[in-house]
Every structure is written in C-alpha cells, then in structure tokens.
Image (tube, one colour):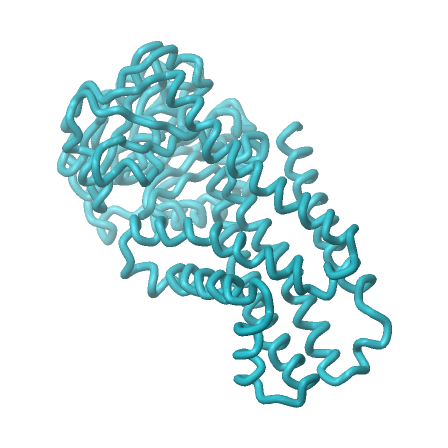
Length: 437
C-alpha cells in the first residue's frame, strides 16, 4: 500500500510542479510584450526554457536514488522513465536558444548571427550558458542508441556527470536575464528552492549515504573465485553486513578503490544474501570494468551505493512464484531464491546455450530442493530450445496462479515478458531485471 501511495504522490508532485512552471511563466509575462517586435518568439522561447529546465530537474531526480522512491517504483522503471523523458528537455532548451535569438534579433532589427554574437559579448553569464548548452547537447548525442553502442560505458558514464555542470552553468543566466525572473522575486525564490532541493537530494543520496555506508561497513575484497567461462565471484569482507537491509535480488553500485576503477561505480547484483561478515557478487566479463573486476587483488577497498531494486519477494502478490533466468541473470535469481520461504515450492527455469554457462547451478539446485520446488534447465541454441507459451505452460502447469520473476539480457527479458502476458499473467505479477552494458 505504501508503494502505491508513494507512486501516486510522486506523480502528483511532478504534475503540480509542471503546472506551477506554466502558471508562473504566463503570469510573469509583461503586459503588451507579445505585441512588441519579436515578442512572441521571446515569450515562447522563455516558456520552452522553463519547461525544459523543469523536465531536466525531473530527469536528475529520477536517477537521484531517493530511498523511498526507489523502493516504491524500482530503479529499472525510474531509469526507463529517465530515458524516455531525456529528449524533451534537450529539445525544448535547444528551441529556447533558437527562438530567443530570433526574437531579440527581430527586436533589434539585426541578423540572427549578429545578435548571437551580441549575446556572448554583452550579456552577463551568457557564455557560461552556451557552454552548458553545448555540454547538454553532447550528453544527448552520446545517448542516442546508435552512438551509445559505439561508446565505452565508462566514457558514457563520465560524460553524463557533465550534465550536472551544464545545469549549474545554465541556472545563473536564467536568474539574471529570464523575463520570468527579472523583477519577480517569488519566481526567483520558487526556482531557487527547486534547484537547492534537487542538489540536496543528489548530494545526500548519491554522495552522503554511499560515503556513510562505505565507512560504516569497511568492505575489502578477500577472494576471487572462478564460477565459469568469463564469470567470477568476488567475496568481500566487512563489518555488520547483515544490517544493510538487503533483500534477495537487489543490487549495489560498486566502486573498487584502485587505480583506473575508483572513479566509476557499476551496478552488480548480490549472488547470495549477506552474512554478518561477507558479501558476494558474481560478475561476467562483458566490458572493460567487469573484466577488470575478476583481476582485483585481495585487500582492495570497496565503496558501495545501495541496496537498490524491487526484484524481491516483497514485490510478489501470490504465495507461489516461477523464476526464469538466462546468462548472468542467475546471480539475482540465486539470491532471490535464497530469500524465499522454506515451503514456497518455486519453479525455476534456467536458459543457457551451453551447460558450462549455468553458473551457480549446484547452489540453485540445492536451494530449489530445500524449498520443495522444481528446477528446469533448457540448454541449447535459441533456434532449437525456445521458450514459448506452450512450452512454458508445460513446464509450469499452474503458471496463472504464480508471480513471475525474470532476469537476464534485455532480449531475453523482453521475450519472456511477452510470453507471460500471452499466457494470461497480468503485468502486476511480472517482475523483471534486465542486465545490460
């Protein structure tokens, strides 16, 4: 119930904020300004700037990892919303730059390029705003799917950090030059509070809480264990790890404090529930960072951010579940399985191209047996061993009475979700976690 209330509360707050942005922009518009040369272009440019900036702040808040919001909605859903929203603020801010320049050029009876040069030379904070705009566009271009596929994850992640700088650079010129701000102290106060609140939440949840947990639990790598081809488990030792409040299926953002890795945090699921002294993550080498993790030396200090994710037993609406995983998705599934009650009788379906790719198989088999469940292993190429509605119902005859948890590569997750829906499971009983670069 709390999760539903939180979701609706977040939606209402975002909607009220959007309405306030529009209302302030209209109310603060000087009387008769629309009839002046360039007035319409300047007004629409100001409106697109305010709406675009507001949506950019919402984008930042979606991935600020505020605890109550993340637990209610789930980081995977928040990231999807972040991605869907991202083209809008960038497009609106670009439209603002174009329309404002055109409007001022019309008012001054000058050319567009001449007016742009005048902006940079004579208007305070305009050069900083242009730099911020350039950074925003760079982040936007790097996030286009075709470009993103050619950019290393580490480069893409580092480039995203510049978005914070871009927003900060843009804020000053809005306060100094924006028609909705000049001579309107209430608008200045409202936006200042919005910016300060956003920055505060980011600092608390993206910096403060991770630093606190890292210092409190003092994690170090103690062992690297090979689990299969290109797959390794990293065992970390620390203090009071059972007080982290981790549920099976959740993940942390891990920061390994060695040269070349300390500055970036990557999400990896726990592959077992924490004990008082140990945490275990299991990683497949699919990129530069995940490949380097398998070569960490014992004693390496570890910083953590989390736990995150709603891929947990608490999301289930039915007493029985079916768990489906492919690839390295077995890690989250294994921890979730461990967290299920002893009489839960789960059905587990593992998909792999080769038998050796079924990492942690023995552990999963034992956990399934202890809970009175069934384990199905589907091994072979996708063309020969395919999961469809008929085959899934044969494996799980009481499928419609269970919740489904799906974990693995995005293609696998998307396919299984479609199969489950075709078999009659409502979306509220399908829970998924997609692993990708």
